[in-house]
Image (cartoon, rainbow, N blue to C red):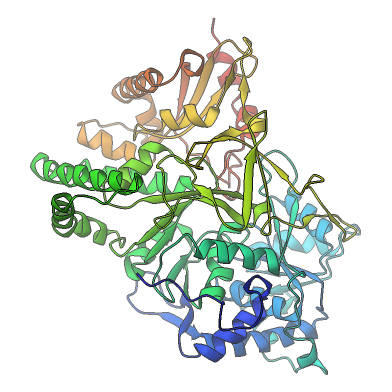
Length: 612
């Protein structure tokens, strides 16, 4: 398979010293008619309604938009806040601001007012670009806050301006004097963006990422993936997440690829079915939910059909096993796999729009091995990766080109090196490691030691083949009253292997045994109940209270315990009906668990579980 175009050879000098404006200019020159950005301008259910800009049009559009922002006083080195969904105004503003030499800072749409205030004060931004009336209501108080430098709002949605600057007017603004001299002057060492951490344990921190760090990571990722030229990317994760900034903005510029914006992540399935992407990235929670949805559909199929599907799954997993070991599958297996894929697996995948996927990946948190093996049954190998905002995203990755181990997070990419400290903490250094954290006075505070190593806070081990295996977050490790260390993620993933359990949090610090809070899976639970002839009134709460559901969850916990050592086993649990999410505070905007929030919210439940 051909690989995506790289910057090497089409621009002079070191490829890692490219800047984003240089890549955009190259794309406009070398690929002027290729589509670069598409979004739905009609109802999502319609078959048409897509608007597309070519790379030449993107280059011209962002020039006009940059002139509009310059007319508002935005200049080189200024931070500008962006709180919008994945809509064209967000993507194009980000690019236009970078062309000005300004520094775009995306803010999660689910961020609490206190977090927004902290970010606005920390980066000292004087301008924010927001989506509509709901966001205006959140941001307006900051304009009158003496401790916040914010002076002006730009509003994307027409009719929601409420006296603030309309976004559409920026495109009609006159071009300031000497504008051309200011445009596209970024240097490799300049900040490209500031990405704020999601704040699992405290206030968000501003991670300063330079053009050079981003380009180094882009080159490293190209070395481990196999993708068609100008590959399409479905962009649905928030731009405040480093993964989407890399996958949805920077890598498309680097590869001259095609971005499809999905403004409503709850409708990502519909867009996948329309676009049929060749690549798909999801954080573990996304893959968990996709798995639960597919399993729910499969559970309703007749036994004879499921027998055929199960045999196809076995063939696919056997085929993946050879690839995992770096061995060529026997000709007889290749033939069986080709038949199973054509007759059974591709039709199933086509129903969900995943039949063209050649590269699928996950990162952000440990993946459940059960979920990875489930998708391997379709012939889809989720290339689990690991990294931090501070490492510009991916630091290690499994790869179809350089090898993979299911359950691991792969080997280091070429822009970094890693080692494990005596206490198991993973250390990383390299050209794609961040400059430092942004302080309110505008200085950048390094977090590296004297030898350039970053202590990541993650715990893991490196096997004899160089693959990294994650254990947990250093700060989240449970230490029982007997002094035993327990990885909560390991136990939680074991519990979530049963389709009824969508979310889990184990607890037991300074206790003699573990307890757990379990949440019914919103998609799988109703399907399981229907397949087992169970009728329960009251929706999810009724299902959580049903004796048959409780009995099945009992069996799930017992089965998980058989795979865990005595210290890791869960003695008691509470079954909850309502899913945890960013809106209710239990998850970060990037879908990581906020353990402290959950522990505080369910303190009484946890206390009552220690009943002896």
